[in-house]
Image (cartoon, rainbow, N blue to C red; front, side):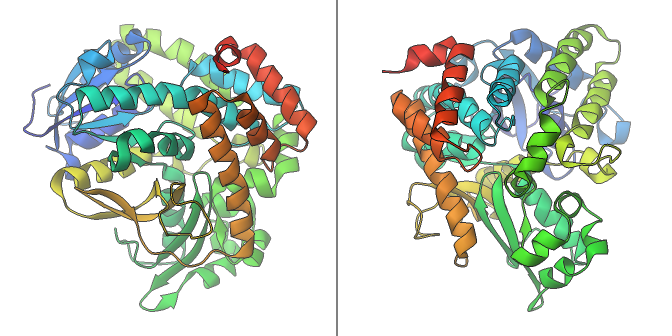
Length: 456
């Protein structure tokens, strides 16, 4: 794979499932030539080598050739990977697939929703992710001080907020759920396709937000969409949430708000399942990576596994016989968001995207250092929130409650403060009692001995 003339990008978590989507986008189309070398680093080196093998077989330019992407280099340590990096993508799963299973199973064992980023499971995940990502950030400051970190590591809002004191404005958090909602709702409302967010009113935190307006030519098209059950049922969020709730809210909730607005239904759907989502993905991965290392056509092996993985996303929110639509299965999610950020940082060409960024004065009711998920502009100077309208009382109430949980979680992870972890669990809207919070924290301490040993 010959080099181009662009920047050096390092992916920490380079054995991740979606790295081929990033590579494919870098190899053709509008992002071609931006990156000359792609460095892959993974906690399990065999995974990075397996993904590199899939990249070498990946059909590019409509299948015309397989040799026009960035050069790929597999590293085994941060010290080896980071020097000379211009940008770092971080998609780390601390504790691996087995850690996700424990996040889910421990919560379920204590009568709580088992979901990896929402509620008790998300707090447990953050308590592992934040220390690992702090190490990455500190190593970047030492070995690649001019590089930007584009963070996909979940829970993305909490991780991004925790890294702010180390990297300042050189960390940007991304998630594709808000951008996907804006795209799908805009299409359903009949808006012209555009990269501008000038008419988009979206507010929230990562995995907790609302689309409140879609204005084109001076007219907000969202109210008519909310009043039309047929059009609402034509895309993912409308089907998940139904027509009545969005109409009453006057806004389209992010798909993850299903767990808040339909908590009992989600818990009932997950609790009796023989296997959790994490167990399904763990078993897929166990089978996948050895095959990628030996298959004659590793790309086709990866592509089949990707489609199977995407089809099961948020399965508990759908009817048993309902499948995800082709658009949702086609890819083009967070990797496109990430690469638009990369292009803006490298070329100083402003881009507008929904990102996880420092609040500042965007919402005066929230702390200035809090990371929020809002329409933002990004260029060579970093990412900054665009002006936003006032929060409704309902939005502020839920955001403030969850932000307090996030900040307690960050304190627990950074300062090894068990009381802060207990406060985070007790204060989460999806954890229904202080006693339940104490029980589930003890459950996570038993499941993750390193967590118990970390407290001061």
